[in-house]
Image 1: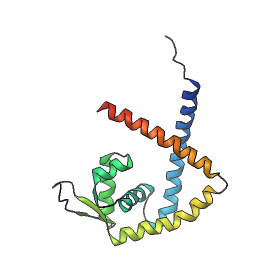
Image 2: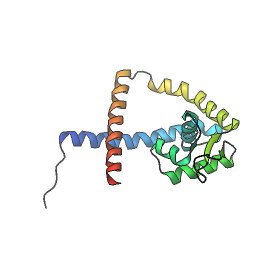
Image 3: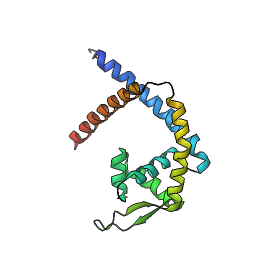
Length: 156
């Protein structure tokens, strides 16, 4: 059996993907430590952020799509946030069963507090990394995401 060889670009992309896996795990742990005093996790913070960033209230499926996440996982987290009084469900005039998710005042305050903790830490973390390097990394990750989304949609 012949072994398939990776191209040099394939090897480099594999190294990048493995690095992203490691960085993602470390980023989530860092985020968990950062927002632990607020009684939330990185996952909950991410959902609060998606809700806060939306132009209007959205159903869970749309939040999951925007995050590139599994709908069932987002639903579980949103349900937990609702139990904690950070979000509420409102009727969706366009879909009877897909309720809209809305931040409560407590949810907005919690998200704002997380951002206040985050900003000085991300500024410190980014210190000394050239902005051009950050932008290049973002461009590569964005293109990789676009290509992976294309593969996902090709399977449908």
